[in-house]
Length: 321
Image (cartoon, rainbow, N blue to C red):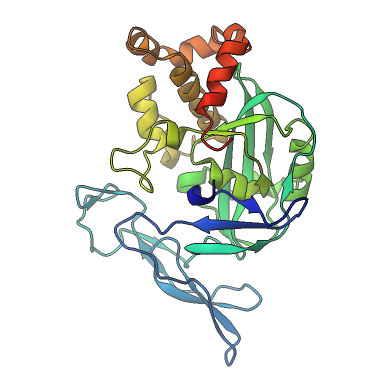
């Protein structure tokens, strides 16, 4: 789990965690550090999570305004998917300020406020969290848990602890109006989740370490679809959930730019990918591939998933148990 960036507790029964963040696999490596303090001007130097340019914040977490020119798309064939321009071209998107993730490449910690389950509760849930940029970095803004039959078990908008700098709407689907009525804090959400997630509960997701970081949840029983369906060039490169859905399930994830994105959809997609892997073999892969979502809605999988032989298959898929 350490090498994949999952938060790990420093010592038993501690609320502090430590994590290792791999350098970005994108076209431009991040600098070795993202924090440099200037005591004469009372500012902290950070590295923008989007354009990788250094920028300054006050010690109180206020951003010094400076436009950020960046590419939001991935690099494919030495070109950006967002604008089809070559690597090295000036950013095609302009934001009003730089942002930072709250972490830096390498070891991060000790990080406070983490929780973990203490009791056995069973269950298998798919989870997806959406984050926005705040003065404190990436913070949880929306969360959804899905049961194996596709039911929504838990869904909430979350009130960030620090002022929002950028809602990251293109990727999160979060808009200002979504958080205006948010009542739950991160601590409230943690308490709610620990009411149904136990030490033996299996959590399913895509690049799940990001969701657990946002939730500040320490958990070992995980199935990560980014590892079940690895990138051809190996880690740290990863296939996107969108590409996996198109290839394996025969349908695209909704375009986030349209504002139709939802953590519920991502959680269900990750769940379907795991169910497909559990049941896939040479004779049934093609048949199941195009109909996995239909089978899930009809609950065809559900009676089987609880038989010991099939449940043990899910346990075998767990990379970090």
